[in-house]
Length: 246
Image (cartoon, rainbow, N blue to C red; front, side, top):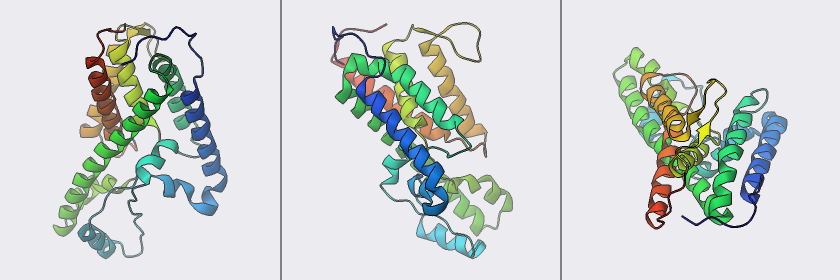
């Protein structure tokens, strides 16, 4: 991890500023051209569906189409959000990215932060795809067994994922590791809470949501994948730096 720089910290360092601009431009393009070009569908991260499951799905619902996974979606999904009128999705992600990411970029430098952000997003996509693939296999078995309860339970395996949340969770995990005792004020808590406990709380919420809740339209394992990737990267970087940041 790089040492502190003696320059004045920037409120909008270049990578944070450009990431927010890109996300906003994609959001506007989705909101304006979605009906014409199906941009959201093109940019969304789709599950990897086996040919056997695809065949079974067409037998169950011959008139329904099931979008396919494409490798480029691993990157595009982290720059796309739910289009209008769901503006809070992008607002929350971009505010959180700015709040935590600007500190890390000022400490690490732009190149290192950009690598970290993109790697966290890819890690989020990787865990999400793995979990969705396992769920797709459960869905296939349910279809083959004509298990309606199992089909309904695993129908979410076909859902896509989009948003910067996974990469942002990586940023939050890195901030909590690097500045664990920084006190934060969360909108739903009237008292300050240290960063390490706040981020741990978000991780636990996603763990509960991923395993115990279905159908809430939140890609919990993408969040967890981003947080895990971010933690691993910053842990490795910290191995070569004796300075602990608080």
